[in-house]
Image (cartoon, rainbow, N blue to C red; front, side, top):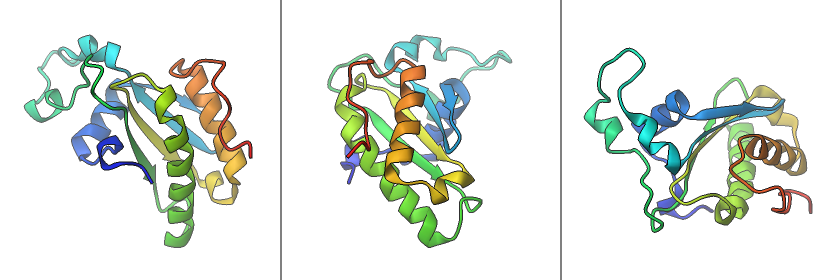
Length: 148
């Protein structure tokens, strides 16, 4: 289980990461990442208006004591409630092992796609690793998740 301090819980946090972060897609999931060093890029939106106060307060900071936070999006397109919860549990377990390898203050949203319903933990771990490596938030020497 992820510690409470490592979870994204607010709708504004999810929107912030999905809208302003970088993303990498795989066959079973899409990973959105907003790194702490991108906090300076959170100025005005592309349309010119300022960030709403609720979104501005959720921006990651460069402090090292700020933990990495992770959220999961598993829609009804993935399957029934039982299948969605199974996918979420697997992803949560895989991300728990990766938390120490991620830079402090990083916000991550993992969105499961319908093929994730039939995927094993090993397959989800391979997709998660590939997406995070593509986004360059984990080093190439970090061991792969879900390999056991």
